[in-house]
Length: 276
Length: 267
Image 1 (cartoon, rainbow over the protein chains, first blue to last red):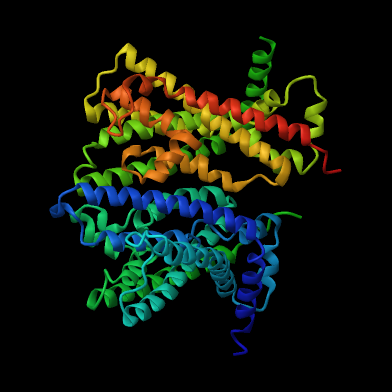
Image 2: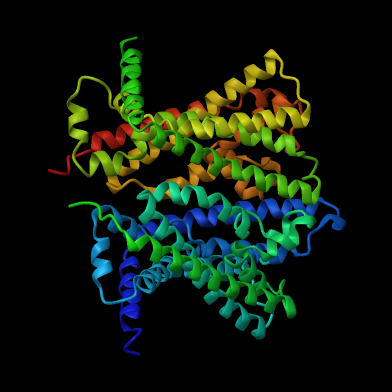
């Protein structure tokens, strides 16, 4: 207990701070609703007007639920490094973090997880209310955010969601270390974001990409951030494939955390502190 | 004439400022290019999976997407001053300085910060138009080129108008209103696909409230020589980008109210 206390404290302090930005959360929510609505209308048009033989191994209703989940939980994706870390690197405050009697990787990791979950929570709750409760009530039942098909599937999703946060945080830590090296947060995120959007399933669900790419898409690390958890939620990934998905998420967390720690250890051995 | 010369000076000053960091400027441009080009990956994936979209081909979609991207990039290049009006001018009290100068606010805000990175999106729009041309084996004529330019003019006016409305609202909110991004970036997103596939309420919004359909969907039909599945008459297809200019005019009415209401903040 005593061992984890500083990391839990770092998590909760950051979580509460980020909840203060309500106006930004509202603007983000509006944008996400708009995007979700457009995407789903486009998917619906493709499904409606094409022959069933061309349809992917995921139903329109599952794609709709997947899209709302994705829009509601966009903040759980590693869009860039932790802005506080970038600032600490530029101002030299990073030396304070190094002086703390804690493991810097774990400390930053906890703060990254808090940053993402605190930004995601209010947006996701609003989205559940709109797409999950209000939409079915006013008659848009078919394309709304449907509940998981079974309790078992919901439980698996819960686990997968936790793994998604862990995986995203591990990615964010790689970006954090990259910022320590390059001192420029914008270029780092700018070069990774296209990959993240295309390969996670955030652009279009991975099942909608061509058949020949499906296996490779399932095994790459980004699938664990959007595609695997949201397909488990909708029941599209059930039984053995669902367990495979969870195992892949865990595998990539281990790999990325190991990579992040090794890289950080190398970088921190000789750190030039900026500012003055 | 004086105004245009001044605008060119403003423009060259802000370009020179950005070129102090040439690597940075180029990287930002490349970033905008890739970030916006990604949508073409989605369009490609969907067409390779489903084959067609209600009779529309990939090239048709690319034509919508390319033209609206070009319009938006031009407007975005010119309107950054309105975009950051709340945070950079009203909140800080800087706007007082602009008001004291013997030139219009609009001119000074247009010249305030012309971002070179917008050329990334422009390049993306042009590349997507090229993809459309090759994919459809489309032969441009003087008439279709003229309609395309007219569409871009109308589209630029519309997106500029949205920025002016965003600026006007910051006279009340002080902060720049991020929620307006729904209409600008979201508008580009919506205009990528033909209006005919959307739900009725959404279509109505995109034609009569914020007429993005009039600067993408209708004129592109005229360029492609297709009749409108929604039943709009042929003369309207070519004329529709005019709606962008009407929208711009209306946005300046809101702007006037806002400026008249302005009381200095900051210190």
